[in-house]
Image (tube, rainbow, N blue to C red):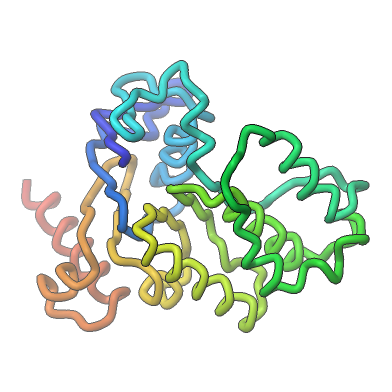
Length: 242
């Protein structure tokens, strides 16, 4: 579904992405991991067309995304920190988005509206909502138009345990529908519960993209966090030996 060919990106003289090559397929739930400054956010923005790469190209369903925006209709995006007009009522946020997407002729996915009981706050203005409640609204919007790909940036941040479990169960259900789901999170336990693959960026370079069971098998580690540390220690050891 997504093919990334030799993507490079600099901000000024500072390289952020250094030749990323990979393919992401339908039916995968991919956890994007890496330390702060590794290029995760820039990589996501390149996929969304919010940042233009200096070199290389990205294909979405075999079509280059450069100069195109129609493909974004097939992507549901949940940013780490969603911003909505503070004076809008919650119901108006959903109405506004539906009005913008008048060309949508599918069935709205309102599972999270129901499961988070968002209708009970439809008459509240966005400015009065807590951070966790804004996160619920943002999650419900990401799934609303039943996209074939989802990009969820730190989706459980700020959610209480019950709401976090609701969202994780929703991700698992969408995975079973053969959608491509891309998640960033620092909470390893959340990633391990919902993801099929791990992609690890370090210093703007792709270190590995592997399914979780293979990663554990290759490292001999039953714990995902220990498996990732194992791979990175080996990588650093090889780097020093060169």
